[in-house]
Length: 370
Image 1: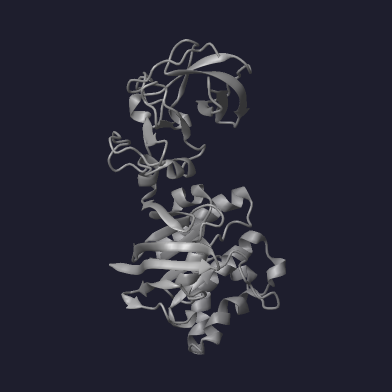
Image 2: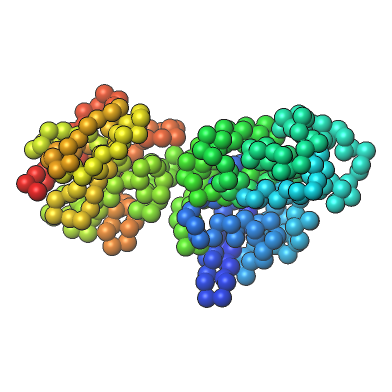
């Protein structure tokens, strides 16, 4: 059943159109990530759902009811802000209870609800502390607890992990996802971090310049990007987009992911490149190469630690199934694209599964004489 529906949402700030006909739906219990670069309109969209901003046009429906004109207090939702928005003069207990008191809810239920949330969020020993006495992760737990204690089934989050270090972000991603599933929350989560979106969301709404570029499950956006923007925004490192190596393929750009490329001896493979530099990342090495006759570079993800000499010529090879082809003019993926990935899989198959890294479809070896 559809729990949240946005239809043709538009919003402008003067001459700047922040949102342009944005529509999507979320079923009850869905985790939806609003993903995109800074300034793409995702926070504005979240605030329109919350009622903190009004759309210029379009409608917001929650549980099939039109709430477009309702104030935030009547939308029965919770929101976790990037700054956590804790009251510095109130201890954890009073921060958690503040919303219940403000809404005039039954005080007889406060103790039980506080105990439930404190246990769920592991906040029991912290109830008498002020926010200044808490770590970033603990403040995050209080902000989440304040959303949970409201007993609203729709929860909005605006980049809640951006102030945490990398290790804590990773653990909090798992905790938020587990909490969302345990409570059956419908969650709309704003992030610019594609790793957060890919690892947490049931559905990703990818925005750029105020428009929905593509939406679907993480595996759908990764395996079947609709255009070059999606192909390069989803996945790390970004998909390589290079001129097609065939002379008769003018107007076509070739996409291939770094992990699908094998390094081969000079004079073999699909194309040749000159080693520019490499970066050892621990589990893998990123090789960055310069392509002949172009200003383009290409990134290759090689397992383990590998040493390369800048200036050396190497060949690069990938399987035909790893290729994506895009219109150079429009950036759209060409409709004759072969299917990628296995049915039902959230990720495409990776190189190293025993398949031969043979040449791509009709790809010719570029002269390695750089």
